Amino acid sequence: DIQMTQSPSTLSASVGDRVTITCRASQSISIGLAWYQQKPGKAPNLLIYKASSLESGVPSRFSGSGSGTEFTLTISSLQPDDFATYYCQQYNSYSWTFGQGTKVEIK
Amino acid sequence: EVQLVESGGGLAQPGGSLRLSCAASGFTFSTYEMNWVRQAPGKGLEWVSYMSSTGNTIHYADSVKGRFTISRDNAKNSLYLQMNSLRVEDTAVYYCARTRAFVPFEYWGQGTLVTVSS
Figure 1: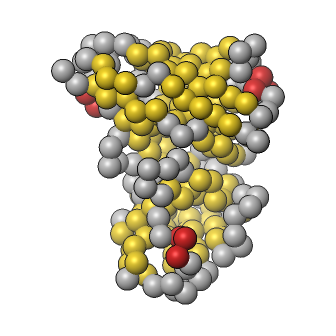
Figure 2 (figure 1 turned 90 degrees about the vertical axis):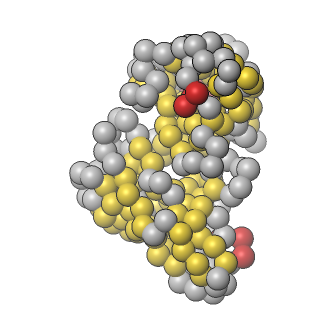
Figure 3 (figure 1 turned 120 degrees about the vertical axis):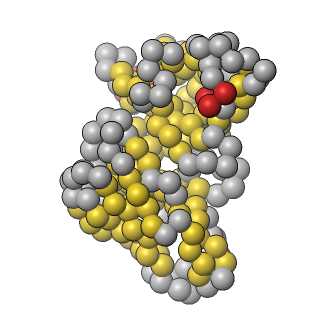
């Protein structure tokens, strides 16, 4: 199975900060990568698909980039609603796998 | 409005069985691929199983292969997960999730909690 490794595991930031989360795949997954946001007690919410395509309705401060084995999720200006856990997920080949998550906390 | 509503969770003993259901509404269920994804308490997300719109293609995570069976009834707009030989490590919230082209998990249900304990 393809392993997905996110860094950092936890990130402390302030409102207005630019935040970057990295996701690395154990082998090339082309652009078969998605990013999700999850808040406590809620289902995940899709943010980005095909590595850099913004899902409809998602604020433009979220962006994704990368291909092959290295990917990033960037929040250009962190808002109070953005404090949550973020997961990357590869869907280039089965079994589909998730990163371990990055918790974005208030600094 | 797309809605996915899971049910059937609860307490089961190790070695026991449970059947989860996911009722879909607000879209043409028979034309979408569907999945089950789970999340153990305080842990990350794990994809469990996939089924194509017609049911002809199925995939399972290695952790559940041979124990879980995904199925669907397009006439009833429903997705199912039959879970047999349950283990303590199967304890999790189970979500059903819709797939669209190039998007693995577009919509999610609210989840149903499965607890496996003696």
